Amino acid sequence: MKVGDLVTDDFYEDIGIVISTPRLSADCDSAALGVMSGDIYCVVDVLCPDGTLRLFTTDEIKVISEGR
Image (cartoon, rainbow, N blue to C red):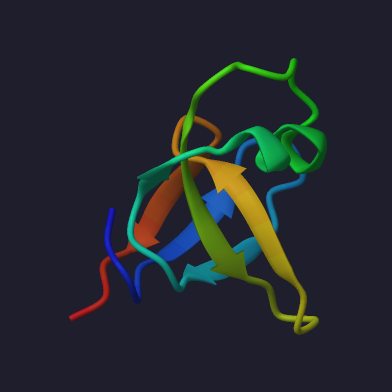
């Protein structure tokens, strides 16, 4: 997964564009992800069509089209 990839999430099936490289989540990301404090995930920032920036784990999204 890299910057510019078109992705969809498994639950809502919304689409978006990855705008950050994969990184390990920080403690402050726990609330946004809805996980326990101290849990570490590989996350990316995704720009959604409505203009919002959402944080997703790489496990819950899949690539529809690779950015070139």
